[in-house]
Image 1 (cartoon, rainbow, N blue to C red):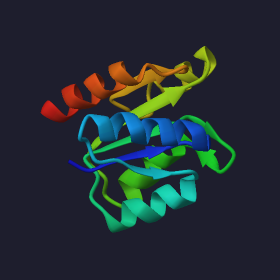
Image 2: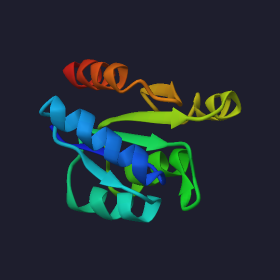
Image 3: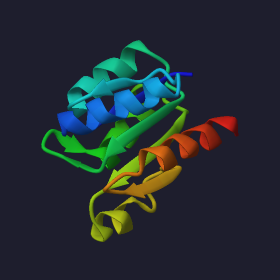
Length: 117
């Protein structure tokens, strides 16, 4: 199982890493869209979790680029900080939309559920 978490908030990435490690789920992290695309080019991820709004780009754009450029066919979770963003993401090709603040226990359950199917 290969999972990538993309967010510009370093503290959030560290917290996610801790939660996933405690559950014995391997997790790669990227603090920018550029770093995420670099990692996606090197690995075949089963699931990508991405913040919608980052200074380096939009999570919706990351989905599109990963699918077109890198032939990504895995699951995609977008994390949104506001309701307006959620409306924008409905047709973006994501499998799940979560809102901040994140409940990491619920996120891990969602990851397990998505990767079962």
